[in-house]
Amino acid sequence: MKGKFKDFSSVFNIVKKNFHLLFLTAILSIAVSFINVLLIKYEKELADAAVLKSKELFIKIFFVVLVVVGTKIPLEYIKAFFFGKFSEKSLADLRIEIGKKLTFSPISYIEKNATGDFLSRLTSDLSLIQNFISVSLNDLFYHPVVFIIGTIYAFTLNWKMTLICFAIIPVTVVAALFISKPVEKYTKRQQDLYGEVNAISQEIISGIAIVKAFLLEKHFFEKFKQSLDKSFLAGLKSAKVEVLLEPVKALIQIGPNLMVIFTGGIMVINGELTFGGLMAFVELMNIFLAPMNILPNIINSYRKAKAASKRVSEILGLSSEPSGTVKDEIKDCEYAIEFEDVWFWYDEGKEAILKGINLKVKKGEKIAIVGSSGSGKSTLIKLILGFYKPQKGNLKVFGISIFDWDTNSLREKISVVNQDVYLFPESIFENIKYGKYSANFNEIEEASKKAYIYDYILSLPESFESRVGEKAVNLSGGQKQRITIARAILKNSKILIFDEATSALDIESEQFIQNTLNETLKGKTAIIIAHRFSTIKDVDRIVVIDDGKIVEEGTHDELFNLKGKYYQLYSMQFQNQCA
Image 1 (cartoon, one colour):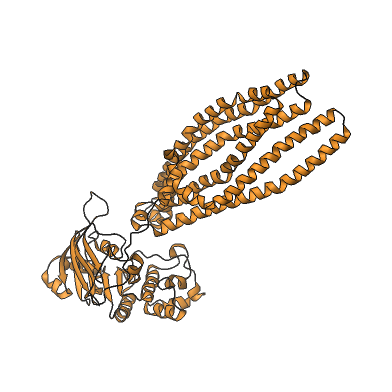
Image 2 (cartoon, one colour):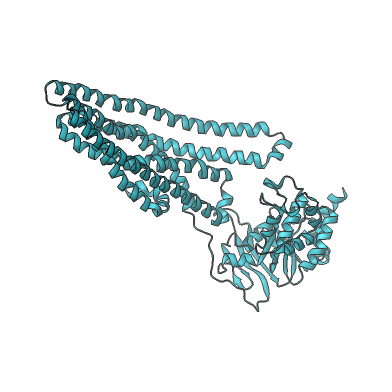
């Protein structure tokens, strides 16, 4: 039994916080069930009074029915209110927890999964769970209770007819369970495929400029269509199974009713049952049939929710980023950053990206890291930020091992400007303010001036309140990079990392920002991953990485005269510029 429900365990742990609402719903379901059966009893007596032509008894019972109905209506409303609150609150808690897990999960998990697949889990998978919680679970609470109470009353009317009508129930239950079993398998497959479809859609939207520039529309459309066809076929198989349930439902609806009318009619003729009793049995059969009618749908909904829960549970089961407990640096430490024989690889069994890195960066030192594409430069930055931990060796920041640092405290000491610029679809003011959320307008204004973006911002109709828009398509690459540089300057951290941060700027703007940064970086440690070698001539030291190893270190003049790897890279860039 434990194995059957393990897929729901993560979801259950969140939903159970609202079980007090579910308990109230259960109590009210019992009360409503009892009232519904009581109504059938009084309807029987009302019909029998009419057959007996007893006007006084008929009117008396009629007023009792009105009282029962008057009690039932508010109870139904309160029951619906509490269950609605339970389902909506549970789903809101689920969404909050999923959002929390995705936000605080290790970056390795995010980087290894497609964005579209995450969206699928947040939309279609949660929709299936929502359907089970808000519809099927409600049916599960009400129908079994009213079934039991109705059965007790049915046996008091006529036990023979009750047993005859119930003879069909085991057959239909077994058939429903057997037919709906494949639905879970096909639903899981369909949801996985929908995740792939969403991922491809995300690729097309994110890379639409490349798609059009390289005439890839047909290729990606075909890729999208093939993925959609696969999900369609999986859905079609599931639909075929669901169609098979319809005859079963029809049999459940028609069979017992025919038995009631035939058997009950004979008993009325033979004087074994009153006409009111026959009417009561017809009503009771609706109560008996309701669970049988909805059982295939409940089982179907359960299997779909179970398949969806497997995918959602993968996110809910994520652990937060590993973090140490140290929140402050060693004050008298000489070095800001120390790599001690660091080895790192992204996937076990694959070639290492960093191979025995030994590097020490003094406090206040400004170094540049250069190397060909794929040499491991950006991976170094990811390790310094604590996104990943080295598999071998040790990395220290301000004398504290990366394994011991409290992750938040570590990142408070580091500002970073990436080559792949990302701006949030909010105002320019908010985007800069994310560097230091407690900053006032004057600080943000000053940071924008240092990043050489202030005049442009003032030229916009709404100035700092101008919205960037999704993917910042209304800004040039240089403008976006300057905003991110302003954000990093505003943070005012002890370590500043520039990952090819000025690559999108023109020469004039780059030179202006370089001069500004020279002032801003005084007394701070700076690591610059350089694309243009002309920007790093004045750094204290240049580190050359090749194939995950440090192959050269020194000033520009020293490395140039060495005629090694740096000289080779520098010469290639100079030749390209001249060409």
